[in-house]
Length: 117
Image (tube, rainbow, N blue to C red):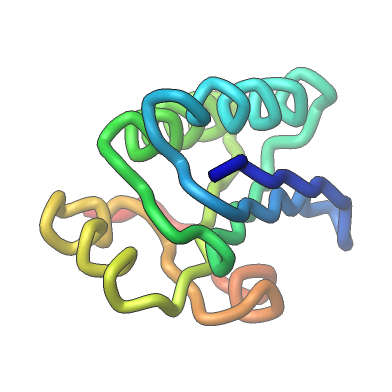
């Protein structure tokens, strides 16, 4: 399955909507979209994975790398996800404590961005 990416700006946030499968073959495309956004000066990112059917460790690595990069610039990266099987991946890996996980883009935009411990 192909990876679908849509990027838009809303109130100072760069929203990257992801659809399809994020795996070893498609993760570089997601990484490229994130790097492009960061290089354009966007450090408040929301990654919407509501339309993602599959996410593997390569995709998680891209998200972790992006989080480190935006945090180094004083930014934030939040994830919109309500699908139980994707949330379970974040839980099993402990990344649910690293990322802000939200039920909607509006919720992610309204979240306060403190450091997680």
